[in-house]
Image (tube, rainbow over the protein chains, first blue to last red):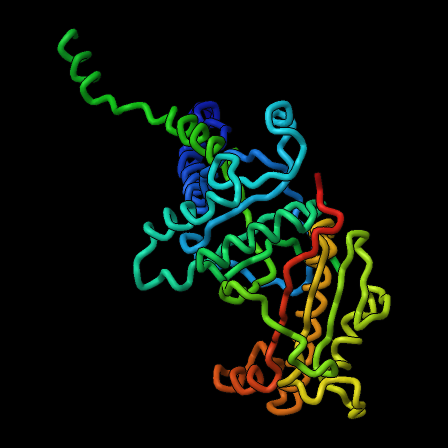
Amino acid sequence: MSKFKKKRGKASPEVSTASLPDIIFMLLFFFMVVTVMRDSEKKVDVVTPQATELSKLEKKSLVNYIYIGRPVEKFQATYGTKPRIQLGDKFATEKDIPLFLERHRSKVPENQRGAIKTSLRVDQDVTMGIVADVKTALRKAGQLLLNYSAKPRPE
Amino acid sequence: MAKKSTKDRLNNEVNAGSMADIAFLLLIFFLVTTTIVEDKGVLVQLPPWSEDEPDITKLKTRNVFSVLVNANNELLVRGEPTDIMDLRENCKEFIMNPLRLDNLAENPKKAIVSMKNDRGTKYKAYLEVYNEVKAAYGELRDEEAQKRYGKDYEYCSKTEKRAIRSDIPLVISESEPSDFGAEN
């Protein structure tokens, strides 16, 4: 009798936490793999419009991004509220586009350079004037594959 | 006694209890920095740059589907104010010309959509129009693929796609925007 009692007293009722690190590590690896580090600070506000004829941008390394929108509140004192172009992490004008494209192009292997796409992330309330300027600059620079970034329209 | 205790200590393993905490810390860091963004958009092929503007007056007017979007985001399709909701149907009818009317395109290969907008046009309105035109072509290609191969354009093989593409080519010409309504 006494033997039984002793055993019961010894048995710990807690759930084993030994496998907790393993579970956490699994989650950790998942997030490490899906994480894409944001490489540039956002300086303009961009709310992309909605569309239906969307296609996915596949190879991230072959895509460069041009942002067009009004400066975020922090920068409105210095840059005003007029729509601006953001290349990389700084404000720019359309004259800076050829250099920006060339910088990106030099990082891409030569045999893939024809497939480089430019993703225009433009705010929906921006007027076409600045967009047209950017398009002209892109055409002059020979960058003809474009992607107007947009959100899927809920049906 | 003393000897035994040192042996005990030597046999001790590294405490792995804090492993979970460290992993948690890293996990939270990655959770915060993760942005699962799927970048999608409307794919466009721009024409190469040339100094002189293409002259669309050389084309027959019946083959040109002109879409104007003004600074008030209003549509003028072939000279008539139109609602964006009707654009897709109008565009499809123009391209295919099922009734062989003589003011619509001679055939899909000759049809050209010409877009023009003001500098003051909202980007949203512009993209909506572009989207509708693209959707019209997408639907026509789907219909053609259904008729020929009994499946949607998306599921066709490369050669089948090419055949349809050459019969219903997507030609959108965009002219330089007029200065009207430019933002100061």
